[in-house]
Length: 322
Ligand code: BDR
Ligand code: CA
Picture 1: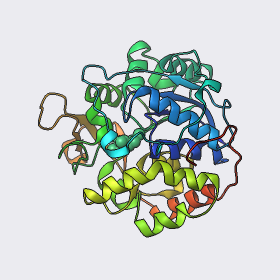
Picture 2 (picture 1 turned 90 degrees about the vertical axis):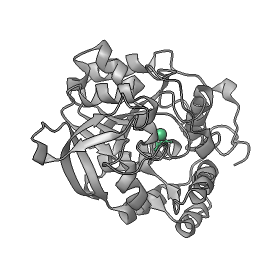
Picture 3 (picture 1 turned 60 degrees about the horizontal axis):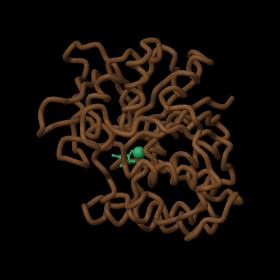
Picture 4 (picture 1 turned 135 degrees about the vertical axis):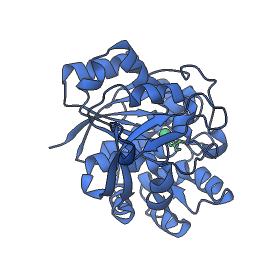
């Protein structure tokens, strides 16, 4: 049976791959895409999401809802230095596309109210939309079957500062609201160690995927090339896929090799460690609020990704640059 899921995203690079995965994997029933301020400009993120539906030949089939356009308290922090425009410069005629008129947060509230306890959410951007839904409706968290978050690190390295991972750093107050909102099944896939070790494919492996020859593989290369170049400049050996691995662990739980329950809180006061995820293991006697993945089957994940990139699709509209 397929898994009803909403993807909450700041669509660029691996967010695009995640949406593709949600469209192609028979294990997923992708109900909606909700957009949150993050990686690149909001308009570009929306364009990237339309491009992704288009390359899969599914334009208009999954609603895209615009959500919160800035973090709760902080100035927006862009990741354009990492991702460029997040689409590798691909372009299409956007006049033939439309956003769903319903706000992203309203969509999260409505869809979970229509099917309480059934819908999963995969949050792969800053947590502003999810936190706003929690604040607007105290029953929201309890209606969500599971919330899988890409964010933070297990008391380890950050990627936007020494202490913080980008998604949590951008809106730390939102992340703390979400972590303490009472979700019954909240899972975290972190930057360090899981992304850096298990969700990273080196250039040789990446080139092999990019050369498969389908429109999807060409799209994969276009959206991921800039980030791969950036990664290599800063000493990360390959193309990073934390967002799509977060969705994959929901759809294919057998990929998770090791996990543990932690009490996770977010630093919101210190400028030095803003957005750090402080993870307390059982010794401290605190009630856990999250399941944190410690190891994921990287080769199994990339084998599944390869299967999807081999699928032949016919884009609905021409894509310049593909
Ligand atoms: C996360 O930050 C973003 O730049 C990526 O899309 C991913 O969600 C990694 O830190
Ligand atoms: Ca993301």
